[in-house]
Amino acid sequence: MNIPYPLAPRVGADLSAWDDVVAGEVEVDRSLLRGVDLVGTTSMNVDASRIENCILTGLELDKLDMADVACVRLEAAVLRAYKTRLLRVQISDSRLTGVEFAEGRFEDCLFRNVKFNQAGFRFVNFKRVRFEDCMLAETDFSNAIFSKVTFVGCDLDATNFVSATCKDVDVTAVDLTKVKGVLGLKGATISSGQLMQLATLLASELGFRVEDTL
Image: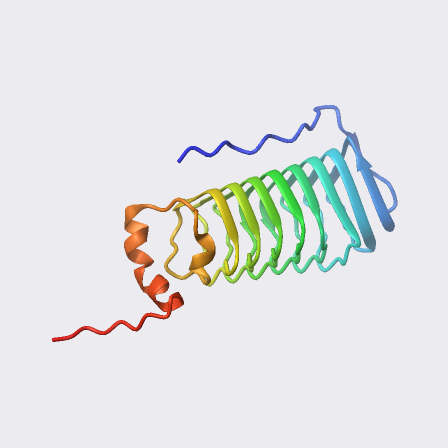
């Protein structure tokens, strides 16, 4: 299945070092944030910038809005940012364990080698998004909407897809044997080998009792 890659962030090469005071509302435009501890921030609006080795752990944000942003090596465990908007954002080699992004909207995003274990993506709208080599164990995608989304080489142990909606979704390159809410993947593309793997999960969710007679 050929799903287009997300559009790359439009980040320029002539970024200015960001050195504003970290407090309350943070506005970043065409800047480089490197090694900044963002504790104390209550909202973030970031455009056409690059973020490296920054700490957002435990923040509770009223607003998180990013467009054309490249992020590398973020520490953002247990970040709370409901109704987040990410547009043309790439995040790699980062730890976002236990983040809460419920009711957000992600478009043209690439997540590569990101630890999302126990993250909350309930009711999030994903459009042209790629998860590559990500840890998604016990992540909650319940009621999420997926359009043109690809999962490659990700850990989906106990990942929850209950009541999700899928259109042009490719999960052929992941192990689906331990996912929850497999019926939420209806409409996704799977391989013939995965179909056999999912037989037990499908039977359980449909209420079948399987018994072998002699």
